[in-house]
Image (cartoon, helix red, strand yellow):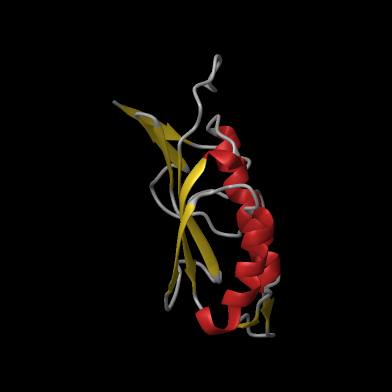
Length: 146
């Protein structure tokens, strides 16, 4: 009942040996999705000093990009934003970023009645401040993507 992994150029490449998503039965499981930009891997809003150290980031820019990346993976998988049923969010600075993220989440997820869990963590594999792990229940399609 497991489908094969789904990969797309519309989202940033995974940072490890895993697909963007995988369909199992009636569910679609997305791997962790961050705010890197497809193609360039640039991280919106990151500011580095002259030695290349991260000194500042823009959580709003990263939220908007991560939501766009999740949408791209869903669409490449034949699913829609409204098919999301469970969203786990990882923030590297809960105290600083939760209010902004929560405001943007309410904007982007209006009308999507997905369950949500938000966790504060110490780091992610790349210098990003947010990552989403999602599960969707896509409606059956007449012509699913190959």
